[in-house]
Length: 231
Image: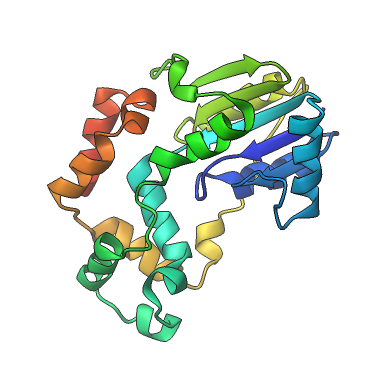
């Protein structure tokens, strides 16, 4: 059965996909968008297979702390979000980077509020927020018609994610081979320093951590600890 890694950007898909392609015997697909006009021929075929012909597909979708995801997204897309060359971007101070991060009109701060509706509701008529999510366990499986979805927090320990994926895909065992994508990027030093030093305003943290996404998937204690990390 095909497995489709379908999630928001910067939620650990590279490591997951690379690991699956080396260990899973079936077809492995990966995308952040699914539509009949997708630029990838493979994704267009998957759309026809899963949505038009209703063949069974297993989907894995990671969830990630929204502030960490937004920061990672900002650094990966810094050229598009700031219009700056790397030479200029790499010379900016933490405060200057923070200003660009918070005030950039193109930075996708609210992606977690729209992605599930545009992706799962639109394509599969599945609203994940209508399904209970055991926050303490950090994972669940949703089944509807030909679609089976494994939702799990990226913050779970690797051994637990490996066990969940192996069971979900009926594999004897599975191992995540860390792609460590961020450490290979040209902006790795700025990214690492920013995460260590940046302090974000309460208004921004209120906005991100008061969303249905944050409260549906994360416990009050997890949100409290996450806020403390950035305040």
